[in-house]
Amino acid sequence: MVSERGADGALEGDEAAALSVSAAMGLAKGALEAVTVRLVGEVSEVNDKPGYKAVYFTVKDEKASLPCMMWLNRYQASGVALTQGVLVELTGRFSLYAAKGRMNFDVFTVTLAGEGQLRLQVANLARELEAMGLMADERKRPLPEYPRYVGIVTSPRGSVIHDMLRTLRRRYPLAKVLFAGVPVEGPGAADAMVDGLAKVVFAGAEVVLLGRGGGSFEDLMPFNDRRLARTIAACPVPVVTGIGHEPDNTIADMVADVRASTPTAAAEAVAPPAEQTRARLDALARDLHGAEQRRLEGAARSLERIAALPPFREPERLFDAEALALDDLSGRLSRALPAMVRERRHRVGLLAEGLGRMLPAALAAPRASVAAARGRLAVRGATLTDRWEAALDADRDRLRGAGERLPERFCAAVAVNAARLHDLSPLAVLARGYAIARTGEGAVVRSAAAVAPGDGLAVTVADGVIDCTVREGRPTAAATGKEDR
Image 1 (tube, rainbow, N blue to C red):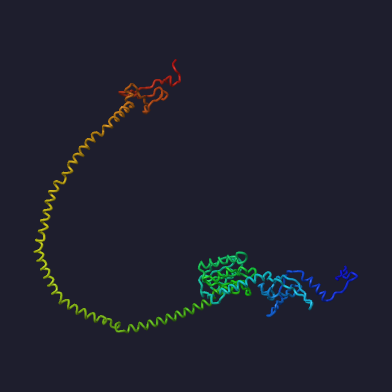
Image 2: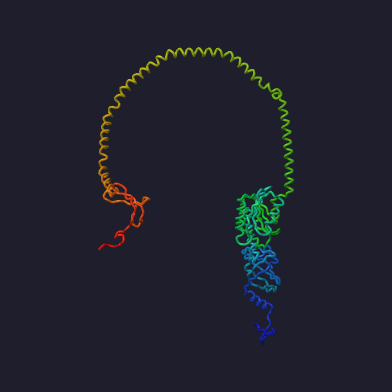
């Protein structure tokens, strides 16, 4: 029976009895194993020997340490490899081994905590890409010795881009830089770097530098992206990475053609030193000078040998055979031409005699045919227009009759219009006794108020013009608005 303790910790009750060690351990074991706990700690030691049914390890923090035990089947199912220094999150319960009085933490589940989980993900991705052959050395390409265009994919801010540009300018100023400024940290950084790689390659880069400055493992996670790794592996030109510092190693470093320890080292990897370039050019110049000198000397010796040949020492001998042949042909031609001309002249004479005999007979038959055709044409031409003459006369008569009748329908209309025109003529109005008064300027007087006493007027009547002077102007009753009653 368990007794209750007072405020001072002493056992209370008259029937309190002491427990045996095993009973006390059993009481403690039952109390501990009834509670499930989740805790976080750093692994300080691991004991995973072959043949064991469980893995034994210790976790600690700043103030305490705790021995742990995890059955092998649970450990293998977790997928976590316990190593010293790894931060883990455990779920389990305390257990008490009564025979030894030793307490352990019975672990149900284990996962990496914080950065450890990220490292597990990166390790799994690295194994996957390695199995695909993306990290094989035989796949990686050598860098161009003297690239004309160097692509840089990094942040436009910070010291990385300045360090790379300064290194390229100092070591290899002949290179032209194609720069893609992208974020190298945070969400979307991996996609931006993929896009930047594509752009500098499309612009003509012969080698690409991918870099950033140092940072925590979480800061470098964009360089552990699967899509970025596959893009680097599939890039048509070599990719050199300079990410973080010497200890940092990312997936991008593993699949790149060359991994440099720092961004500056990456720039140095693609840019040969100016001294090395100068020495290489000097060596090439010496080799070229020597080769040209040897070529010229050989050409001079060949020219001397050719100049010593007989055709060049006595060039007229080249035409000996042709000169003999020409002399022979000239003699033969001079002998053959007179006979040939005589033969041709004789043949022409014979042809002329034959032609003289044949021409009169040959022209007789065509001359008779021409005369007969002329006679037929004369007869035919005289009667050719007879059948059209009667039709032409009939058409002429119809045209004349239609022309004479054509004005009749317009005569009545012309007479009516003439009568209307006569009625409207001012001369007809004047003939009826009316007159037209005009001022000295020729304007028609339309109102008595338009003239003043003493003004001169020209009055046109039917048979002439009367010049008169105005003595007085009187308006009519209609003009004044009054009526005679």
